[in-house]
Length: 325
Image (cartoon, rainbow, N blue to C red; front, side, top):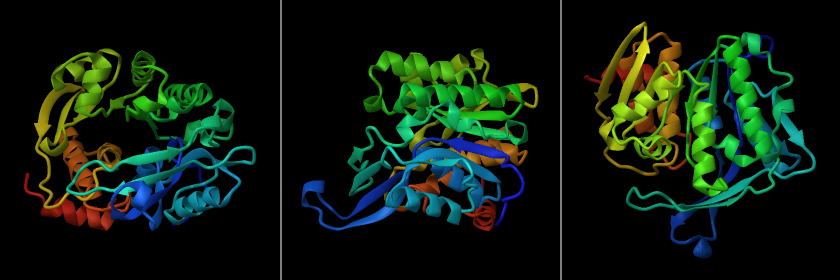
């Protein structure tokens, strides 16, 4: 699939890392053999949307090193437009090492990302973006946690996209260890969420960020800030939607998809975002968007990697045809 001539219609941005996943269970201290894969929430979403046929660009900085080259090649092999991937000769590409989880538990992860190329992202990195051509921007709460300049970039991209009338989705994607304090995390992410049309928190994330308990009240908080729809991830229970698409407010819960074996929960939220965003961009109803979010999220947790389970369009159509709602 080549999109090289026209400007991308969907933009995501943030940090990708080279990920080394243990071949066997056990602590990192005892593991000798790893598989190299790609990690990063916003590039997972970029890959998922590109697999469904959208012309997606991903904006970032990578080091002038083998891992930066690996990331660039891996994304371009997925059909992602790499025109906004900047090479930073001064700083390295981030890495992470992940234990092999057993029994559906969250795997333990060790990061080597401090001072990475992507942590030096700034508003200047968006100078080449054709905002007028953008139909949609997806932002996460990880990028603003990387550094003050990366936070400024996040705000800049969201504000520019909003001025031009593109839709914006925001996944808070809480990473408390990257923030100086919980208060700073909460204030920054809620302020950024106020620039988005579609806010996609997990239930516990929404509770922490808003101080509200129920999905209805968490959604109300973001609707009051200007969001048109809030879609909350409820884990195995599915998802909750509240919003005003097509000029009428509705709220409902959509049951989760049954999964026989949970292999690795990392990437489930990114798969959910791919489902919701693609469905809304396809012109589907709110209910169909929540259902597709659940469906793709369920695919993501049945594989080891973060994005290996994300479907291509024919596979998605087959999965949706099998669903009985």
